[in-house]
Image (cartoon, rainbow, N blue to C red):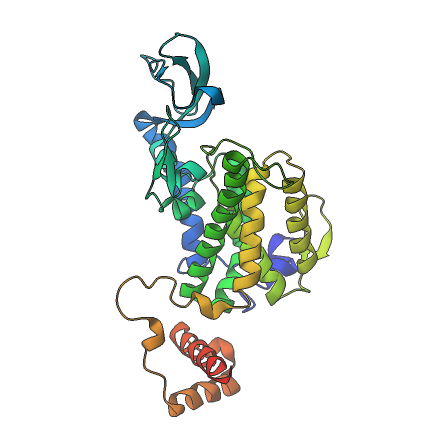
Amino acid sequence: MGIYDREYVRVGRRSGTGLGSLGLISINSWIILLNIAVFVVDPFLARFASPVLVRQDIDPAMRGRALLIERQPLQRPPAGASYARVIYDRETGQAVGRQIYAVMPPLQAFGHFSTARAFVAFDPVTNVVRANTEIWRFVTFQFLHGSLSHILFNMLGLWMFGGMVEQYLGAKRYAAFYLACGIFGALSYLILNFLGSQVGLRWPGVLPDSPMTPLVGASAGVFGVIMACAKIAPNAMVQLIFPPIPMRLKLMAYGYVALATFNLLRGGHNAGGDAAHVGGAIAGAFFIRNAHLLRDFFVVFGKSSSSRRAPSRDEIDRLLDKVSTHGLASLSEAERSLLRRESARRRGSDA
């Protein structure tokens, strides 16, 4: 049986529901292509790589004292390498800690997310907290990946399931949905990491890792997409890759989230990544049921989309007649968007 004979791909654009579609004009396709482009291009910019502080270990008793950090190596290690710098007490000359640096290609260095680079930044010597404004990282980290297998599985997930969600929500709202799931994944990671690294809590699920630990990947958005599919087509049959067994889509989605939650609670390998996965999944389950909240996601300046002219009764009747005669597939994206807005407006007026 070929891949396009399988149910979870066959319900793609070829059958009208969108699961597994990869049309070059779809938002889902552009998201996949952008991720691949960033992954391919960044290594070619390795000569512009820069060291990024990813961990600092220092005796808490030394905080606030005059410290001296060992100089950087005269010859910078290549991209992908790491090195350490020793921290000394300026008065006694005693080594009191160290800093770990990772040499990152420019896009990774500019776009990765970490607790220390979200809303606050930490002085590497005094640990003084100051305000930070690098909020773009809530979005850019979603288009960065650490390895070939990392991007392969994420893009496979988007290719298999993103089309269904895009057709259900519409292009613009799907883009907002995907980015919102990624943003909530970063927020989940930030909160748990802040509680563990700065507040000092040691509860299950709290992340005590360094607040400078980088977070990258589209996984939070992918988990949100899979949870949305579990709501849209819960009984669609999918076949897992490992192990290769058929399963209902909702069971697969809930199983993935349960595994991620279990690994997060026990502090297993990649618990930080699973914090983002769980946050993205929760956001996906919420926004697919409250899609009207995504309407103004991209509105920054100008009037809100809620102020658009309401369609006339004749316009709505014409579209409903068209659906009754020729089916939903006969509507253009603009016509579908108009019907969705009118439906959301009427639900709001009935509340």
